[in-house]
Image (cartoon, rainbow, N blue to C red; front, top):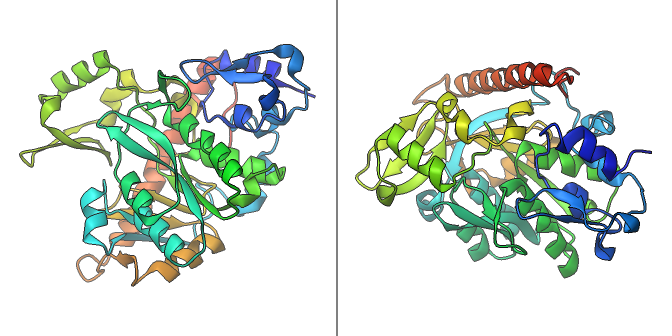
Length: 371
C-alpha cells in the first residue's frame, strides 16, 4: 500500500501538488500530529512515527489515478469534457448580488437559493479580505454568502499560519469547521482539483464527505501568485496603477477593472510567469466532476456560463430559475448557448493539450484525458 511517503516522491517533488489539502484534512492520524502544512501550504510529515500508513492520503490525491474510475462513475463522466446535461448563460436576479459579483453572480445566487429552500445548512467558500487576499470561510447565513461574493484571485492567507496559502488549500481546510459544527447538508465551492478530491473522498465514504450535498465547480485557467514582484510586473504590462483597481476577473483574458470604468485586458498566455507550477499539468478546465460548473467564458459581460453535469445539479438549477436566477434572453442572441458550449470545449481542449505537453517533459502520463 502506498502512503504519504509515495505522495512526496510522485506528486510533491515533480511539482504536481495542487495544495488542495485533502491529504492533511482527511488524514486519520492528523489529530495525532502525523501530517501538517508548511508556511506555503505544502503538506509534510510533522511526525512520521505517528503515520499509520492507511493509504487514504495517497488514494484521494487528485494527481493519483487510483480512484479515477470510481469518481467518474459517481458523476457519469464521459469524454471529452465530462457529462453535460445542460448549458446556459445566466445571472442573479438580485441586483445587490450582481453588484458584488465578478460576472453574473450565478454562484452566489445558487447558494442563496439552496439556503432559502433548506437544501443546505451552509457552504464552504472563501471571503475577500482585500484586493489580493481572502480567507476560508464556512457560510451559514444569507449575509455570510453575500460577503463571499466576488472574485479575488491571489493566494489565501491560512487561518492557522500568517503566510500565503493557495485558495485550493483554504477551502478544503474549512471542512474541519463543518465537522465541528455537525453540519450535514453543505455545498462545496471549489476549483476542479478540489472537486475531484471531494469525489474521491465520497467514493471511499470518508467522513465528512457524505455531508457535501452539492459540488459547485469553477472554470479554471490556473491559479496565479500575486506577490509584490508579480503585481508590479503585471501593472507595468497592463499600464495601470493598483490603487485604481476595483475588480479582477478571468474570462477569455485577464481583466483588470479600473475605477474610471476602463477594463485592461491581458492575454492569459502572458501571465504564465505568475501561474502556480502544478496548474501547468492540470487537464481540467470546466470542473468536470462538479454538479454545476460556473465561469465567465462564452458569456457576455455581467453574465455567467453555467453547466449542469448531474441530475442533482440540473434539478437545483431548474428550481432556482425565476427565483434567484434568470437566463439570458435568447431573443438577444439565439446562438448564445451554442457559443458558450463551443468556448467551453475550446478552452478545455487547450488546457488538456497543454497539460499533456507539459507532462511529457516530466516523463509522466497525463491524467483523465481519455474515458
